[in-house]
Amino acid sequence: MAIIPIRKFPESVLRQKAKKISVIGDSLKKDKAMQNLIDDMFETMYDAHGVGLAAPQIGKSLRLAVIGIPPEEEEGEVKEYVLVNPEIIKKEGERILEEGCLSVPGYRGEIKRAETVVMRALDRNGKAYRIKTGGLLAEAIEHEIGHLKGELYIDLLESPDKLFELVDDDKAVSK
Image (tube, rainbow, N blue to C red; front, top):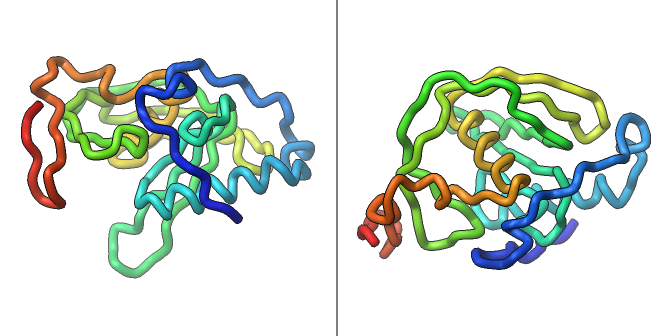
């Protein structure tokens, strides 16, 4: 496995609509290059202390993302998700939250996201699945699928004063 450099805003790959992955089913499961890419994406995401990573963030214009949700308790395992050709098919509710991005380091912003989302995708083995969720997983799904559309969370800011530069681990200043 390898850690891949994360592309930073304003690199153009982050603004391109990612290409659908045509290898599916058992072919995806047997595609060693794709499986290695998924493993590398998880390793890169964890190395950067992220919760999600989309392929465009590592320079690959593919509809592929990985998410790792930490356990609610100190003990327990990270719940991992692979999203191949994901689509949000329903959103419900609205909430305001503070979000950051590995491709926009040093900043966080206040944006609106759905309370719950329903998503369908393929897993790393090419098997279709559907999930209805809220909380951090819903936020991560919306965020990563945004990357696949060429969107960044900063596009959702209501105004520039909702973007904060991180000055150290605990403090942010308005831009």
